[in-house]
Structures are given as C-alpha cells and as structure tokens.
Image (cartoon, rainbow, N blue to C red):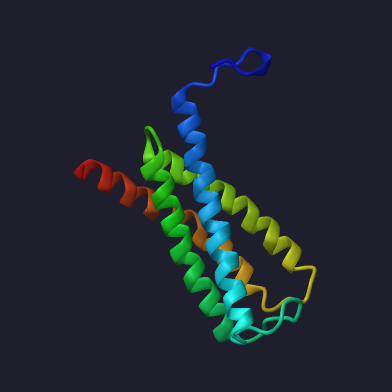
Length: 141
C-alpha cells in the first residue's frame, strides 16, 4: 500500500501501529472506566473533588498497575515482531503521559503528589513485565 508523501505502509508496520493503539485503548478504557465506576459507587469523591484518602489512591494505583501490565502484554502479543519492543514503546508513551500528569498535578490540589509520581515510577517496570510475559507466551506457542 502506498501512503501520501511516498512512504510505504507494510502490513507489519500497520500491525505494529495497531498493537500500540490497542494497548493505549485498553489502558484508557479500563482506567477511566474503573475510575467512573468507583466515582458512581461513592468509593471515590465526585469528579473534581480532591481525592485525599490514601486508601483511594492505593486502590487506583493497584488497578492501574494491573491495567498497564495487561495493556503492554496485549501490545506485545499483537505485535508482528519484537513483543518487548512494542510493550516498551507503549510504556514510553505511558511514561511521557504520566510525567505530564504529575507535572500538572503538582500545580493543582487534586490529592497527594505521591500518587501521580508513583504512576510515573511504575510505568516502565509494568511495560517491561508485560512485554516479558508476552514474549514468554509467544515462545510457548
């Protein structure tokens, strides 16, 4: 297939892109979906109200770690080659977004600063573990 500007889009490149996009979609959909459920159930305060309870932040961090692992695993499994590379690319995107979120959170009173900093800290290890699990699963067949 030809794309504009004379670049060639191969099926492998398209599948690589799909792997990253699916990983991002899983991360956003499940993260925001669980956030919304916990807000609706009254576990979290309403949107826009600071989330200062450490238990609420630990809960959010715990499911975001699981979601990061799963999304990087799926990206690695879908990838046409180099599952670890795809998981780490997704992790790099997550690291950049988490860093921007932590910078923004430091300027607002949305809750304790340790939470967005913890998200930054766990992003790349989760990506690596998700990629390692995908590579292992693919090696097993």
